[in-house]
Length: 473
Image 1 (spheres, one colour):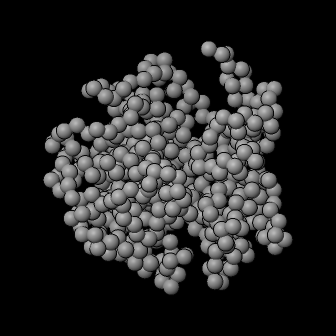
Image 2: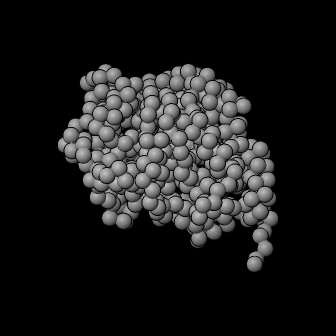
Image 3: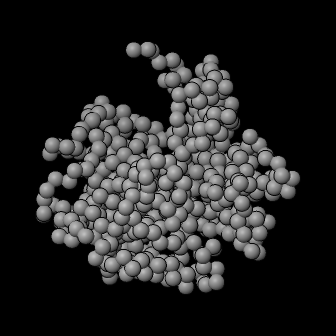
């Protein structure tokens, strides 16, 4: 076997230039969710280390990670406790398959803790490695449940426009982002129905947010009645729609959704992949929005603060009891289901979240974060601002009064993201929505820096659009 070079072992650039790394990246690495022609023309930014909320690249630039990776590095970078726990677990039991009546202690202990933290009634855990796999598991469990319950005709799953639940064939089909369907696989698959997103700014401005929340929830009831309640297996939704544009529902929305699902015997599957583990100032978005009895819940990302891949589908006693009592093999699972190292890291991550009261920190700092978000509403490019916990969306518009969006060819959001990055802030563009979801350990002073840079990036974007230029590359 070839020996690893020092730069490979440490992640530091060594003697290779940024251009060398970019050439090697272009030559061999196919990135997720990328336009490869565009990426190869520009070259990737090569990140080499990170600590707290900051990242450094091969050119020595320090960048505030306003995205927490992908909404996942909840406790920040560089926590040696997690590295130490991973090494200890690797030395003791590096792998344990969960097939053939076999289990391991970290997986069992983590399942106990997850069911204690989650909304009441979620009593069992099925492990995977990514959010896509966790939602895929929930999808299969919903259909399996009704099959075993003697109602196999209940197969249709309802999801929302602008949703994102993953990139497998089934979860891409659940997602309401049409671009996902253009990547092959004949998506969406059969048995998926759709309702609108609870996007008050674009869909309900003639109503108060509370009135719109009830109207948007009513779309689910109407769809169930149209399809026939005896045919609908489940409703899948995120507490806050993340990749769909940081869409935060009105307070009236989720309690009414819960009532409708209960009334028509439709399983409620909540996607907590982004909102889980403190993002909203509560352990889960379900707690924040009053979702009291989900039947299924997908978690990932913040479960380990992304130090190692792990995800899980949390399953209600109602569903688990049928799986257990009726028996029959559930033909679903993964080599790394219940991986002992990943579960040990998750346990340590949860310990840190608890002992350092990081979830409480988010709740305490939220008013300052929300005030800085709200202050951007006066910017000429900003049509709407919204936030919840440490999650914010800043909607860029071509015309504030008319609520008119930019033509997609202008790529206003991408321009703003580039301007922010040039000033030392990673700011995500979701179309023309600028999303912020920093590590949960961010301080008030660091929040101020984030929003000072965001305003500078908005100003620079406005100047670009006036001149018709492209901005930094």
